[in-house]
Length: 148
Picture (cartoon, rainbow, N blue to C red):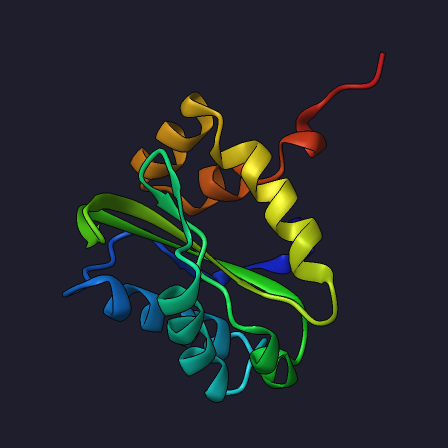
């Protein structure tokens, strides 16, 4: 996952008015690193209206619809931390990990992210981290394993 996460797509002091604003900020972060065209942002908001992306532990993983895949230039993720939280249909979200993926890449990404983010300790560490290097380290736990 490290090659999918550009430092410029990590924002640890974001503020959002509501869920859709948070999703749009994720889309803009992905657009800012050249991963998507602007139209992908609307596909992310549309996905949320049909299939909620809140996964628990104060985390949401917004991503686009199948129709939005044409707007993806390359696979990428972004990480936005909302220290004050965002109301996400009655859930308090403090961390959004936005996904852009061509083809079926989102399935693999969602699976890898879920393993990390659904672990309460990992999710808490990510929600509380104010350090970009720490976020990158937390999102690539396999790289930390020392072969024996």
